[in-house]
Structure formats: structure tokens, C-alpha cells
Length: 270
Image 1 (cartoon, rainbow, N blue to C red):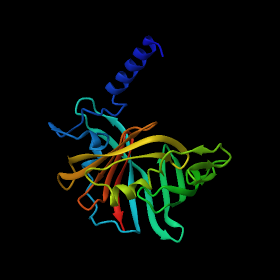
Image 2 (image 1 turned 90 degrees about the vertical axis):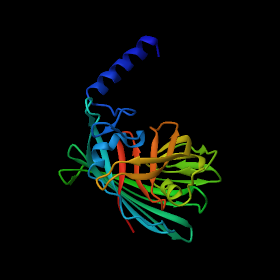
Image 3 (image 1 turned 30 degrees about the horizontal axis):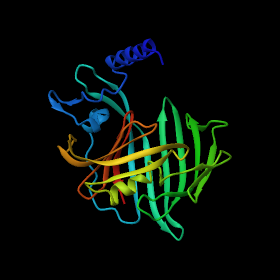
């Protein structure tokens, strides 16, 4: 990239930000003067109507249901965000003779098109629940009717550290493999104030993003409809992702997960 191209891209980003079309991380405020922590700046508008789910410690088996929050715009004068609930995410964890099993059901709707994802993931019973095998399917609907040729599926496995996905080439992994869904178990049940782990990420069970890091990021105080809430923050950074923040309460229950334009807010736990 030339210096001119770099400056042009920077100018375009600044113009979009000024128009409220990019999340303005680092500037968010709640109300007139109360700074919002960076980790929740994409959803400060949503937090005015969010109340935390009644907390409990996660056991070996559970079911979590999240609202999927989409960032729309930021008012450049007040730094308030506009957020929509774009869908739901359900993560159910059970134990099986082959190891922990996760069932994921996700549905989002954008501009009249509903996208559905359903997956089953079997993991090793180790610290990070490293993925062993999975099956995932995608479908789409418009006005409640299935869209032709929009039914896809894929499967894969990891054996002896080698990742295989459909007909794609095998990849030798250097560390544990997690998804954004299975990682919640580590965050909720095992992460501590001195946590620092590395892993590879199979985002959406389809995109390999190596070299991920999860570290404890201290306590944050966030605004909610029910009043200020203090949560413990864990920060994920790495190749090919926006920084992702996992915010857990005193019981380790992941109440909020933020990642630039798409975030999650817990609605129920069983």
C-alpha cells in the first residue's frame, strides 16, 4: 500500500465516523458526561434497556440464550449508539460418552432476510474444550420462505492436531481449537483474574483464525437499565478479528459479549 492510498483510506474512515457510520470506540459516553468503558461503547444505546439475567454458577450442563445486538450508527454529537436486536443465539452444553457436546442455534434478520445456523460440536474434556468434530448447516429465508440454493452444510474434525474441513486441505494446528461459542465455557467456568491463554479460532465453524489470545482485563463498570453493574472483563485479540470482550458477573456468568458491530446480551440461563 502506498502512502497516498493509506491517507485516502484514513480519510474515508474519518468521514464515515463523522457521519456516524463507524463505531467510535474510545469516545463513547452515557448521558451527558459519564464515560462508557471501551468494551461496551458499541452498545451504549442498547444498555439503556438491558437488565442483567439473574445470576448463577454454570455447571457441566446448561443452556444460554442471548440477544444478538447489531450496531447501526453513533451520534457524533452525543456518542450515543443506535442498536437493534437482530436475532437470537442459543448455546446448549451437555455431557456425552465422547466428551462435552454443544448444540448451537443462531438466527439473525437483516433487511428482510433471515439467516439460520444450526451446529453440533463435540469437544475434548480439557481446559479449553478443544474442538474434536462438528457439523454445521446454514439456511436463509426471505419473507418467511426458504431461499433456493441457500441451504449449505459442512463438517470437520481434528485428529492428532490436524484439522480437516470438507474437501479443503488439512491444516496442522499448533494449539487448542475453539469457536466463539465453545470458548464461553472456559470464560464462564475456568477463567480467573490472572488468565492468559492462547488458542486457534474456528469462527462460525468455517473460518480458521490462528494465534488468538485471551487475557483478563480487570473490572469494568457499565450502565444498565437497572443501574450500574460491575463485571469482570476478558479480552480476546488475534489474527483476523476485532477485539472481543467477554463480561462476566461474580458467578462467572457471561452477561455481555461485544465485538465491534455485533454483540450478545444474555437473556436467560438454565
